[in-house]
Length: 379
Image (cartoon, rainbow, N blue to C red; front, side, top):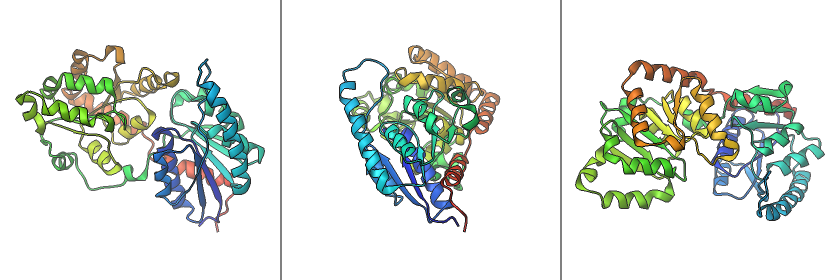
């Protein structure tokens, strides 16, 4: 058992920041049940993830750091200084033993305050191209964890380690489930391939539109389980309701959802033969953890072009193919799908490469390092 220590988690703005923090928090609770864990970050519905774990949540003003001219800077610069005041004040009374940051809005002010109070800091970067917050925070951090080897060049070599991206324990939980049973449970045919389309909670409009515009053409090749995003649920329901009979009758081959909770995502990944997805780090490491071949369509407007770099870094391992948005047409997509699903040897090679890329123990590694930096003693 570890003596009681105070651990502060910070970062936020999206699930890409919050979910890895949740994964590490889950592991900290296993390794150090006596630890007091807190979270500082912007107000968000995702903060309920911390509350459900019994973690104290404190809001910090959210401000985005931009390296280009924008009228929004006239609002966000004052917000940053206000978040800095909040961080100094709240850290003074909390005084944690260590701070773990995932970057994102609000995190830099917490890192600066922690440095002032001589609190050790460890940061983690999920993407192949780091965000500005983590690049600045790296100068003040004791340890830096990265998910992609390509990110190493942005950080000091002597304190950077390739550890992977932490995934929530509920996704990796051991369950007695085969691919055939997962397909059956989802009411798909077990002897036909299944493509899982992932677009995140907001959906990926470019991907959604191509699927919907070429509905029957894609179903000639494979069944489809489609995460359309919560905001697009009414659109797809209207599309199905108003579609010709042959499309409505294809319902057994095509199913959709707005957003996957953790058990549903796990079941969907078990069932899938091939995944079509954006190239956020979280999605890539989730796909890799289940050893699934994938086709990645990086978001064209992603900050720093990080999704594009993520996609090609992952594809270089042999685990995925990449289609850029400008080339994302039905002919190219169908060619890629047929090339993968029609070649058992290639599917096996892609699955092996995906599993080799995955690092399922990332949360454990980071939790151990956080406890080490906190100065915690085993008692």
